[in-house]
Length: 224
Image (cartoon, rainbow, N blue to C red; front, side, top):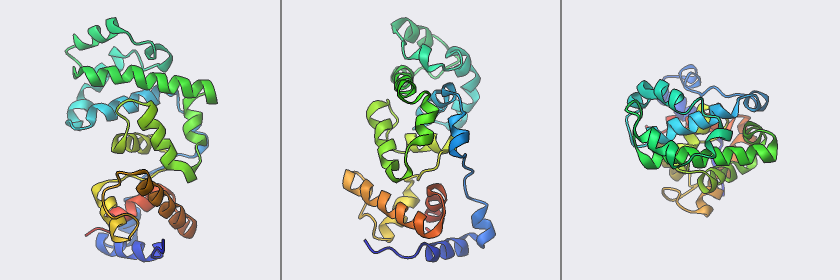
């Protein structure tokens, strides 16, 4: 795959956004691997849950109800919620302070089990996310999709981004830019398309020295 120099894409994005300073102001803030590893695992479960509930729903409503979620899930300890049972689900479904979507509520237990399993393997789930090689970011996304619940696609990507973990987002504008650059020929629905995206980001990161998240945001900004 012959890619355009990323510097040319940055110039186009900066022109559309009113200059390099304006483009730089759009870049997401990221945490270092050391900082990621220090985040308690309950905060990862909380953010996964928030993103699951916001998917296809009003973000502001979820945010307004979030204190009730924190209380109902007792701080989102994965070791507690990996054992979520029918009594827990019945109590949650009866809680008028929550968004009472049974499938999404049930996902908390399954995602807690994923985090607990990663903690067993890595010491903490946070350490797993911090250590995961950037050259296999698509492998991390695949892990969330296969072993998590409702964490595939942009939901998992958004959760990682909000936690400060470097990675790309495949928003409609990013996908359009990737199609324009010849990386993919349409929405990425296959493993081969995801491998092509990983390879493109690897190349652009090596060329520019930028993190994936900034490359992703620049691609989005380059779409008029």
